[in-house]
Image 1: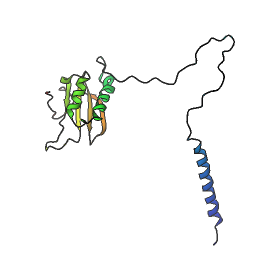
Image 2: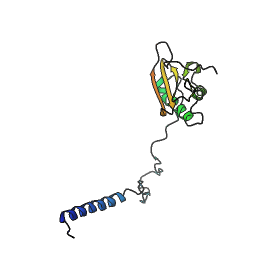
Image 3: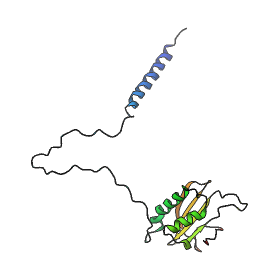
Length: 173
């Protein structure tokens, strides 16, 4: 059997590159946090006895809350958090669950709209939309199997009032 020097050389190059890459990457699997310093912290002459800094990074952001004096955009994070919480529950396909949660969180139920949970032939809705009219703008949410993850946006209010176009469900509870 005759070997072709060109094939052997390129095979050796590929093997060398693969081994070099594996060795280089193996250094990336360790803990990214540097080890603690072992240097002495004895006070220097003339220095005060201040305790070491405990700054470990940015502090956690507070949970979103209703901002009654804020705009629709200011309240979108809170609206989105409520939407996500209902979506994560076993009532995720019930429009009423979103309206009840928003009302319980301080949004005005009289300013809300919601679409039906079922199609005109009785099948579960592929998506449900709900909204809150807020100072002339709309906080709109959409959820359902056709939507994937919940979607929340701010949109202009409709000229005649309200937020959702088409027939919506009467909120009479």
